[in-house]
Image 1 (cartoon, helix red, strand yellow):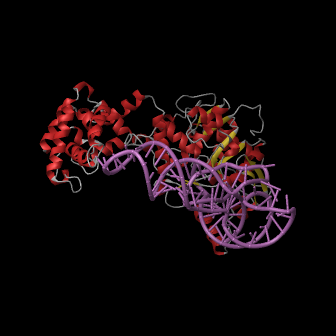
Image 2 (cartoon, chains in turn orange, green):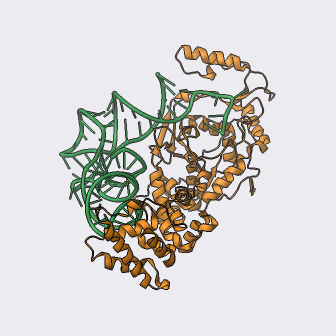
Image 3 (tube, chains in turn brown, cyan):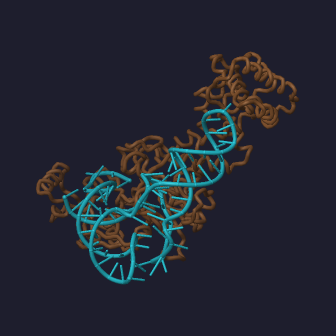
Length: 475
RNA sequence: GGCCUCAUCGUCUAACGGCUAGGACGAGUCCUUCUCAAGGAUUAAAUCGGAGUUCGAUUCUCCGUGAGGUCACCA
């Protein structure tokens, strides 16, 4: 499956520092990481900062933070160095120049003599003729010697059909229209992505190039560079796109794809994100869906990556996050929930109640904002008439509330637990015409809400004194 | 538009060419319940269309349709 099975697997994630990493493209990093970890290989982080115009200050740190949060640790990278340092392309310009010289010597690269305006004219002409624009049709016969002030172009010699193999997609092919004289080095001295990533992948010994399917159509160009340099290309692992929630478009920043770190802020578990992201476009077979990180590494298999795009689903992510929360030790759940609460609300007894109403830690803040926890800290104000259960007469409601007070007063304060309260009240409630005529006024007296947790858990949390005081007030 | 690619419930997906096309999310119903949530049970829901190969096609081939990607001194 990996081709040369004896080779050591080396994968990389090579983002450009143009802002945050969104969930639509972090999955490539995840798959590259899984592949390296599964094979005890190397995972490299490389920064492709060859476009100075689009560069955003601080994004390298932000990207590293995103990867760290997800637990995608790298073995070589800008911060930790490694055998092939530096890992930032702008610091490797000499290397690209060296490779460019090799191509020039071989007669496979030449200086582009045209101005941008001239090229634009060619392009317009092609558009008018409804033909695709191909620079090679205007290739200069006697290009000047390249002095570094003009773009350097690759010279495609042989026009032919390109056929190659992709581990995910199988055999792929493209006609000769896909081959053109593209730019290797820009007039500002920086290499293009097309050239730099190949040089680096060769230098760093990358064995598996994991990337999104937007690169399929430029693969013939990449292959012609490998061929020109006399280097065997790496294995290509092309991943399907992730589509936005609403439409069918690829998930991108423009379509509201969120920063990976936004999910950290919202209180998702990194393991749940990793699980969700892995399964968006991959399935090992079988019916198990909740996987730990270690299990994912074990079952990850390149041949089981999907080819069609998958739509992002917050619902499924939320469900999976809840499943991962359930996997956590009790103390950790308590710690995380308490952290979300303001100091005056940090009551350990609230934890089980909160837990069953959230799918991620951030939901706790929403509960607070909606005022759902207020009733545990302050006696509620409410419309008295709502104490009545259906058509039960007021006298009966009053009697039942008095009955409840009597029962609860008899309960020992040390045994004022949800279970004991429930047993005590239910025994009495069962003897009435309907349980509601007791349970409803009690719950309403305690909560003041049409919809709330059951009276037993409320009583156990606010304690015996407060419970009885609220019931008396109701009467 | 040229080139490349993809197509199973609403969504994520499973199914050596062979059981009644399976699971999960979401939705509905029921149980548990005074209400909400949680939990349990359960129902509905799909092989894009048309030819061909075959005893037999979700699976292989062709055509059509739909969708996505790509055609930069961006990566």
